[in-house]
Image (cartoon, rainbow, N blue to C red; front, top):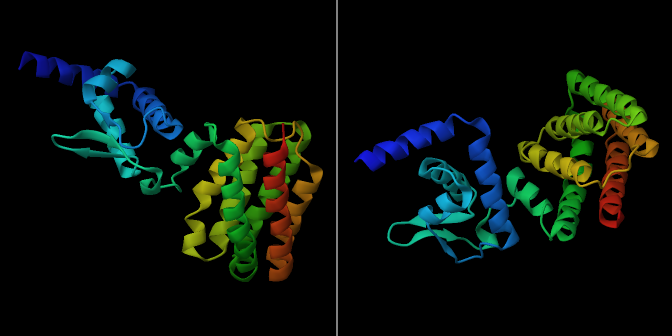
Length: 244
């Protein structure tokens, strides 16, 4: 009984540290994605407590999140089992982030590029028909911030503006399924910056293309919006796959 009380107290201390749960989640997720914990492998709570040096409460919280993502299953008398990749929620931004950190980055970037080619040009065409004046203004504002931060070389601020542009565009399509992919696209753009797959100074042509999409959307020119957005996605995917 005393041991349980001590465990609870340790758990409360752990939970009081905001970054601890996220740190364990990231590390455990990375181990699963990398194959260090392979599909079918059974994990024990005690084993994970020792590995990460945290309380059972923190480990269980991380496991719950990974279960919700389909990466682990937990059964009584069996333990915690790593699931095959086919069971994972591959659209979860955290799964994408962990996979981009792994050896399969190139193949994942290729898959994500193909996904974007199938979605974003169509979303741009739909946005030309459905975008509100407010959304058109947001697209233009995002492009202006991209231009400013691109010239100064502030890649984090540029990234924030770029993410905002693509988020608004997907939402402006009026298609809730496209809108649900905003976090996926944001993770791709973030990964491109954080894995040094962006030039030190963003290409002026890329910024110009974003401006042309914003103008086409505002003008209601679906064909032009789709064409230019296709150029944007093609250029970004090619640059990420071939940058060394």
